[in-house]
Length: 127
Figure 1: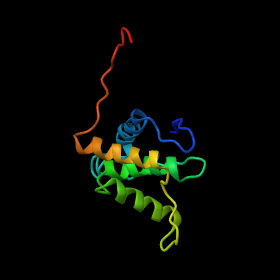
Figure 2 (figure 1 turned 30 degrees about the vertical axis):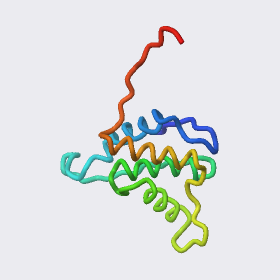
Figure 3 (figure 1 turned 120 degrees about the horizontal axis):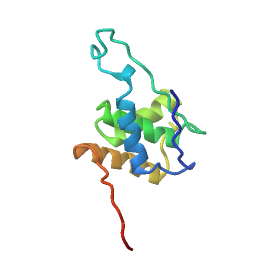
């Protein structure tokens, strides 16, 4: 299954796009906890990529690391991504570098720390 999430280069996704990605990824059957799939214990892979494989990819991967509690903080998630993307011992690890993109990883961290994210539907009648 392939899903495309439109995000302009050098920009963060909308928070709804980021949280929506986490919620949809969580529901993928091959990512079920061990034993939850009838005892098969199968594990799957989510592939995330953008043109450069750095900023936008790093946001989604870092948010997933937070969501799954693999990384306890946004900073640690982004550092882990940069190290894995560039390779261990790299002089200049390349990961999420744009300030606006880093902020959105922090927004994901804060959202998850405050018991998730809900987006109520609003109907504007006038502005």
